[in-house]
Picture (cartoon, rainbow, N blue to C red):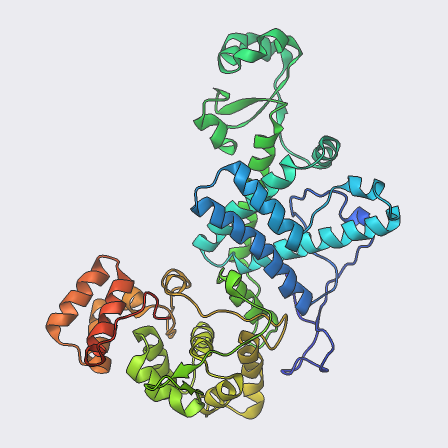
Length: 471
């Protein structure tokens, strides 16, 4: 979908934006005639990687607010208010009517609309690519994007909605007048308020599964697998079309993801976006700090990582470190998980580069250059310069499961019982009795409880109480 147009591990000339090249170019508002979009055609303009990342993060903030509203069981009215506020700040999407209003010239306002819709278009496709990788990510993206489209539809001017509909090729079959009269009684049973104007009303029929919300609420007449819907109730039809199209496209994208090389500038961007935890991201990195027993700040160095991780880190990070020490390499997902964890501990980026270069001791300096970029990107020092947070327990447990030869993920979730027991014995010398308690929590699906219990057992002498999130 997107390919970087700048080669070289260092990203080209410092200060120059890296450009993603596309085969076609469009200009003028004709490229984006409507505020509403079905997102059927991928972007065809040039765009810098910095813009790509920033725009995707801005859209992700809007989608995150939608998810938060759903999690809090907020009403649709309250959800719309939240979308309105976040969109105005990060993803403005004005109607065509603004080009004919206000004091500034129409040409200037047209350019503003073009910029808004270009950002809307590009950011949607970037997140579509990032969120197509797992079924859970696709589900989240589909739900949030459908809600965002619904908000745009309900807040759009009637004339603009009608113009948008005329531009689409929706397969809605009109119900012939004679059939409408034939089923008059059944239709009025569903729509009793339509009785005075029934003869002037019209209906369209669509497969019933395209409008499950209306069928569930018994707001439509269903005949031979077709739902008959009053033409004036277009919102449900349009939302069903949008959701059906996006779901199909997400599945296609999942099956045909472009093979991005690990040194591709887009890989770290897409990986970090798909974590779905960008609300904690800031524009500048400010390293954390450790404290010693006297409460004095300690600057973490590369030399301190291995003993610190072996003594105090959760098993997921201990496993990554042991693999790194043995094989002198980690695969991509493992590097992402471990690098952000070390950053969260307070390891400065300069020390992180030293640590990773030493760990990848069998790699040449030229081979390490691509990893250098990805490490710095995680610290917010490359690309859009966003400070990405470490992966939470929930993200690690429910994220990409490790495949053959991969070591990322949660050992309590992804290890076999035998391998988990062996790891607990080898790394922590946990007794069989205590292991039985831990494995019982694992079998019950309480992976975080099992992890917390390991921390308590291994830090009993220090009388430590495990935090609610160890990483």
